[in-house]
Amino acid sequence: MALTLLDIENLSSAEYAKKMNTDPAFAAEVNALLKNPPRNPVASAVPVEEVPATVAPVAVPAVAVPPVEAPKQRYEWQPTDENDRPIGGRQVILYTTEQEKFDKVIEANNLLIRQLRKVNREKAVGSPEEIPTDAEKFQNVTEFQPRELSAVDRFKIAEGLTNPETFADARDQLIESAFGVSPAKLVSTLNDTQRFIIQQRAVENYIDFVNSTGVYDSMNNRQVLTGWLGKRNLAPTVANFNIALNQCRQSGLIEDAPVVQQVTQPTPAPAPVAEVPVVPVVTEPNPQAPVAATPGLGSEQPQAKRHSHVPSGLNASVASAAGPLVPVVGSSVTLESIDKMPADVFKQWMKIPENRQLNERLEQEAAQRRRSRQLGQ
Image 1: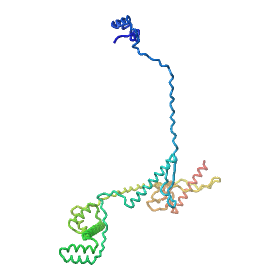
Image 2: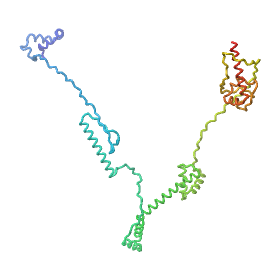
Image 3: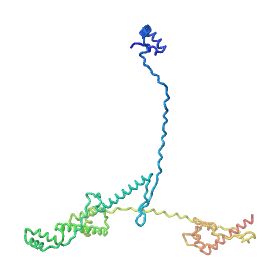
Image 4: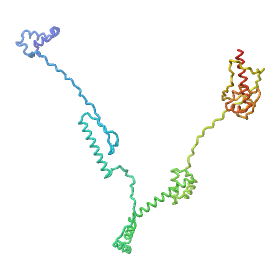
């Protein structure tokens, strides 16, 4: 591509000096171009039209205003019957505009009419239900009712009975006129009835057999006993059930009732009986005579003692729960030994007059000793 003045002008001073010093071909082209410059040096340049500067209008973005939702309104009513009694629960319709309210009322009314027509149709025709294919259908009860025969029918039957070729048909017509059903239907009904009676009687006899013998009524025992009778073509009577029980029990085919182990509560061991310690005889030296009550010091009345449930400290001469209550006199019993009596023993012990007197005397002596100590202080 030939070098032009525009190419030279587009070079920077550094690039121009470098190319002139290092590229002889570039330097030769520049010198030739400078010696013979083109007449229209800028012809190859693309003219640029000057566009007058204009201020473009600034587009103001539109502010999106969110739509205002209308508040939900509520309409309720209570369905009632002809006596103004409520039927079901309250009906509620939520709407925003009156048109929406009308539309929902119309929709509810349409659903109600459809359901009413569906109920009426099912009532008249019957609703299809899913019935298992193996379900046994109920057979209509056969009604036996004689049928009136005309004179012609009676003559034909009588004539047919006398003829060996038509005897069977005449016989069937005669039986059907007497019972109202065909001979085949009559035979089927009688067989079913007889079978049901035998089964019902077998069940009743088996129940009586179980109640009288107390045999364990399990599914295995039922199958063994009934199978034994059926194999030998024996009637399911109570006596035959007993025979079958004895035979099958000898063969080890009868199940016994499972043994229910009763959990017995362990009997608590009796509480150990503490030995009654022997209380030594306490002899008080120099017993003091009763002292008159000092004025100003209130006379102390003997108070009832609290007796705790602890082993008694009585000796063999004192009453206890293990033996008879023996009246005790003298100084062999002290207040300390009485305080150690159990409550029930103390009540029994106090029933004896001598014991009550002894208890009162000991209480008075103890009160006197307390007063003496107080006066000595």
